[in-house]
Length: 311
Image (cartoon, rainbow, N blue to C red; front, top):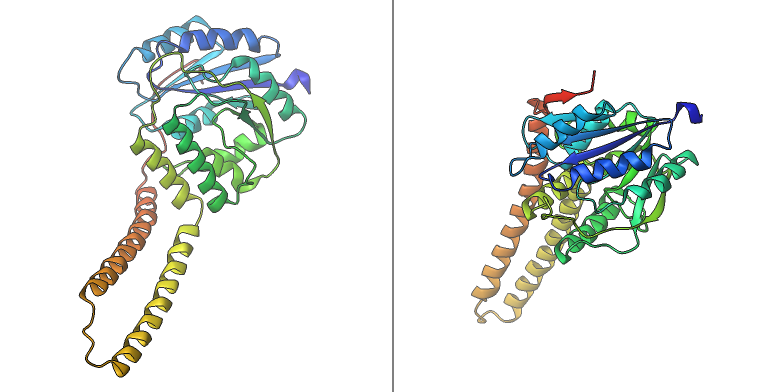
């Protein structure tokens, strides 16, 4: 019902002092048409600018602006999980802090949720990321399709809206390595997409370094699918069969051509190849065991150092 509708906008903040105030002001202008709303800023321990001070000032200026300060840099998805755990809305909109997502497009997402979708993903008319980020996004979507049975036509964007049912299911996950889209696709296929704009960054550069992107992909690989283990097993079976066939060929060749010298280069190539396959398989197993260990010893998903306007 309309009188029960409350919008929560969840924004992970990282080194965005030049955009966060403008973004919040624009959001408040857009959200005033709804009966109730809140904006939750989660500062992911920004260490290179005054994002913390800007967020504190914003939360002190208006009670609808909530603030969470994380004790260290946990990563974007962990920061979003912190915001979802504290949000009180019937609909949560998740968006970036760099103004590449237009606040005016929030209405499209909210309307789709009101029409019955559990989650609404934005699909950009034209992406304004650099080549590196665009390639990373394409690889991320390809892997998600392969490992999580994501529909191939679905683009997993960071600008999305989810209903209260989805919020409640997502925050049940308490592990230290969340991947928001993976959590969503675990339990629902009731999604829709809307076309939205995508702008150039107002300032600064993306907080996603190559190492952070690799960490995100590994979270998706080993936290939400056992497909990598099955692929490693299948690859091992194929290599074993090929090796068996090669051994038979070598024996037959030796019988018919007993004086022909064996090839040193081919032997070394085979050893190096099989050694690489073994190391890759051990590495995959290590990722699974390492994440299981970190979960068992109680590594936190996030730690709140400070909060404003939240009970």
